[in-house]
Amino acid sequence: MHEEAMCNCIVCGELKPHDQGLRIVTEFICGSCEREMVQTDVLDEKYPFYVHQMRQIWIHKNA
Image (cartoon, rainbow, N blue to C red):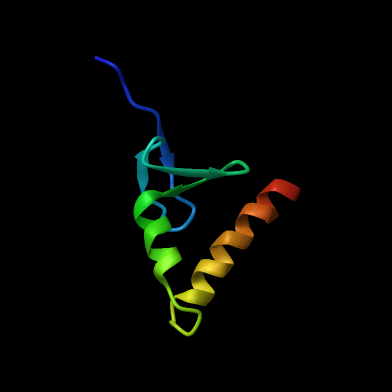
C-alpha cells in the first residue's frame, strides 16, 4: 500500500494530501482554502484573516 504524503494547510491547519492543494515557497494551501480565498471579496470579514495567513508564508521564509 502506497502512503500519500500529507501536508498541513497554512490557512485551515488541516492535514491534507499534498496533491490536493498548492505550495507557495515552503508552505501548503489546500484546495478548499485556495478556492475559498480566491472567491472572497475584499470587503468580506474573512479577507483580513486570509491576508494574515498569506503573510505567514513570507515570515517563515525569512525567519
